[in-house]
Amino acid sequence: MNPILDAVFGTAAAAQCLMFIEAYGSGYSRRIATTFAVPQTGIYRQLRRLEAEGVLVSQSVGRARLFEFNTRNPTVRRLREFLSAEIDALPDEEIRRYFRQRQRPRRTGKGA
Image 1 (cartoon, rainbow, N blue to C red):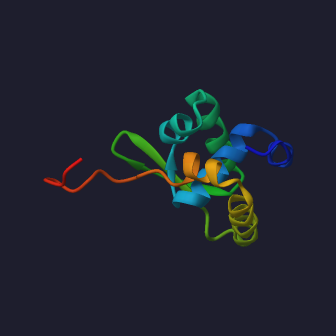
Image 2: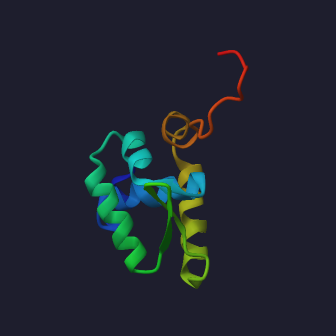
Image 3: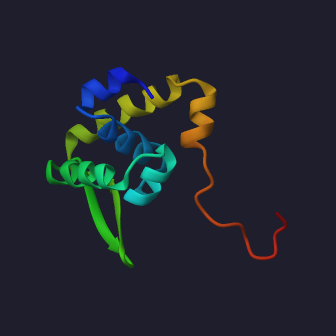
């Protein structure tokens, strides 16, 4: 990913969390950590920090915690525009690798 984004957001984990949630709309710490091949504890810590600052909100879904952007925060709209532009500026290989993964299982009976 972009080292400038890491500097802007303070850590690579924070940048990864925000970019992932912008690309997919929401995310779990484990899924984000798996996508970027990083430890889950660092990702979860950043998600909780961003939630405490009002950038993200979360809800429990089963035993997991699902994070998404806090749409009530007026700054988040501009942040999302920035993140979207940064994702669009990434090389095609990075976009395919991190931001275009299948999120739902295939329909039952559909071939592999």
